[in-house]
Image 1 (cartoon, rainbow, N blue to C red):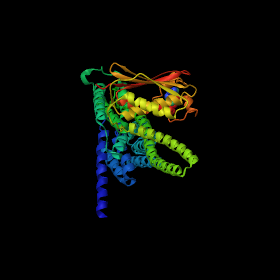
Image 2: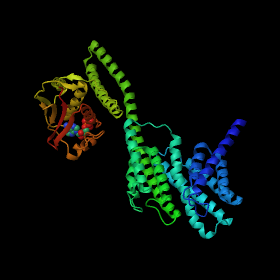
Image 3: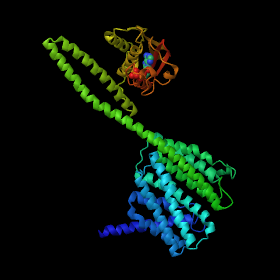
Image 4: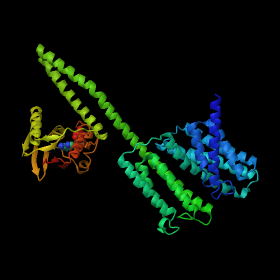
Amino acid sequence: MFTGYFFFIIQILLFSAIYVVAARFGLSLSPISTFATYVWIPTGLSLVLLYLFGFRFWPAIALGALVANFFTGAPFVTALGIAFGNTMEAVLGAYFLQRGGFRSSLNRLRDVVLLLFVAAGVSTIISATIGVGTLVLTNVITSSVFLHTWVAWWLGDMLSDLIIASLFFVWVSKPSLKLDRKEIFEGGILAICLCFISFIMFRGLFGMVPQGSPIAYLIFPFLLWIAVRFGQRGTVTAVFVVSAIALWGTLDGFGPFVQQTVSQSLLFVQGFVSVSAIMSMILSSVVSERKELEERKDDFISMASHELKTPVTSMKLYTQLLQKEFAAQGNTRAQTIFSKFNGQIDRLNGLISDLLDISRITAGKLAFREGMFDITAVVKEIVTSLAASEVHHTIQVKGQIKGLVYGDSDRIGQVFINLLTNAIKYSPDSKKIIVRLRKQKKTVVVSVQDFGIGISKEQRERIFDRFYQAANAHEGTYPGLGIGLYIASQIIKRHRGRISVESIEGKGSTFTFTLPQAD
Ligand code: ADP
């Protein structure tokens, strides 16, 4: 109990010390009316402290603010008033974030908007108003500089919530980072480019850019790239780095924001930094939200197809058992019904397998059992077995391919079955389907031609996309999930082949895939 209390006091003192150091740093950078500055790190730190670790830490902020202002030369009463304002700012900011259901990962647009408006925008008004009000009331400054001082105070606090708080929120809430090799490479290159451009623009590196050139916007493409590819962690870190370099350069008299006085320069550079931060954080949250939804959808498909697989497999077993029993009893009517039932279960199984394949492709886990095989034999076998149950269409096979192909014969068979069943499904009013096999230099070419409904140009561009069904299928005329061609294209791609379609609406379509010939 006593140790816990002692430990708590140590934590309070420690944070107060950090607060004082951060505050003194800010006040050393050209303050307005001695006590207000455009660079005020403590606000962001205080918000994170109260929001992530609890409101009981408020005394640390009060103590830190009191000491920092007292040592800057404020009378004790004035320092007390300022400390009150700074503490209220953090308490109310953290309270409203909590009430708004804020998540510190900043992964949703809602979180960024809460941080921007509630914490950075509104809670900072409290501190600026109480702080500058106290300075005027205790005659430390005159009321004529109220507005000027207030703006600097508010802007400094707001930026701190935007840049410092977001940096700590995002990193403290989820410190582990998983990046694959490609992402590390891309991130490294981007980080180097970002620092390089920042140094050229804001620190006058190599004197490449004439002093005062308005080229600060060159940083935007890099910030946007990071926001799209590297989530909120990449974004807040990049914004922090750019801000630090921009500030450092501007204070030393470099870059596009340098004005006649340091405080004017700071006003301009901080304006630029806040716009960059707002823009990149909003973009990153929108992209993260979309990615998360996609992931959830993929997880759902994977889970649903796995869950469906087991009961359907059992159903299949039971129907086969019953079919055998009815056969033994000589009950032909029940047998016919059960064989139809079986057929429907097979269809269901096919759909579930497709969904499972989709999840495997998304997870990069579609497995192949590769070897040499005779593609002509595979094609002919499939045509024979489909033709046996197909009464409305005749399937002609033209040509043949000598030599073997290297790949997964089952998966290539799956692609061919898909093209053939589509040809049947989408040509209800014509009879003929032609399968062509030929060799072209070092590739084998398989095509399936039907004389059915055809596909319009706009639809042709999208039919290999996941979950895409052309308009006519949407109206419910043709059943399907719109995933067969996507799976087919992925399988062919993995075999280093190509799949394409030619079609005339109302006249029919020809789907063609190629595979490299084995040496
Ligand atoms: P589906 O399960 O809907 O058939 P696919 O991915 O196999 O899914 O096909 C995607 C869409 O491409 C279909 O919805 C259909 O509109 C169109 N399509 C595919 N094959 C043909 C074809 N032979 N003729 C006309 N349209 C086709």
